[in-house]
Length: 221
Image (cartoon, rainbow, N blue to C red; front, top):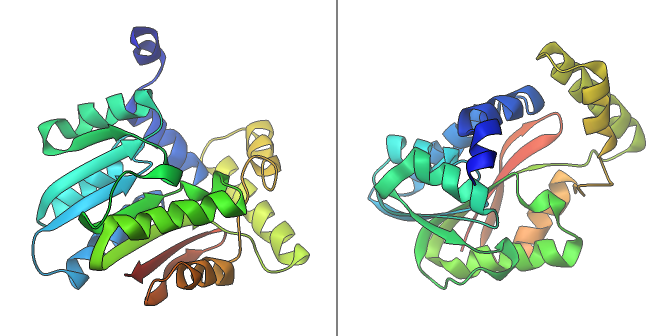
């Protein structure tokens, strides 16, 4: 862990993501704002794939949160989240596909987590998030998406590459990231996101936010 700390920290990680994902901070702001709209009271919040704890930090700073649980498969990420959140949160090392919770939370979030999963794994993760929610609970997810056509894919990927270069990445680094599409992560269309939520049993499934190749969706159990 010590060697890891010498070369990596939460701020550096978050800056790298900002170079990669347009409107990165907006994901968290939108999620917290929506949760505050749906619930006019303190909530119990589970953040799946918590990373450095950024979602938890924004949630705590935005609305009354009674209990915050951050889970991730990476002990390194959990360590960074602990540094950011301290005693304000609980931390759990667990896989999004096998969440050990049932009817325990009002809000469950997953930001840039599920696009690495194959279809059945993704469904298992979404079903686990639904199971973790109480009746009437709110699920919010932000993910990379697939355009509807080959032409749309090519145009959107080129825009994404140019964005990364404008943020300081080299053409080589930007190109390598774009080349991961469909190989290292497996996005689905916006329509497929909403259909999956409905198929998993959510009684409401809606689009929250969309820009180029990222979207936010929300659903109510």
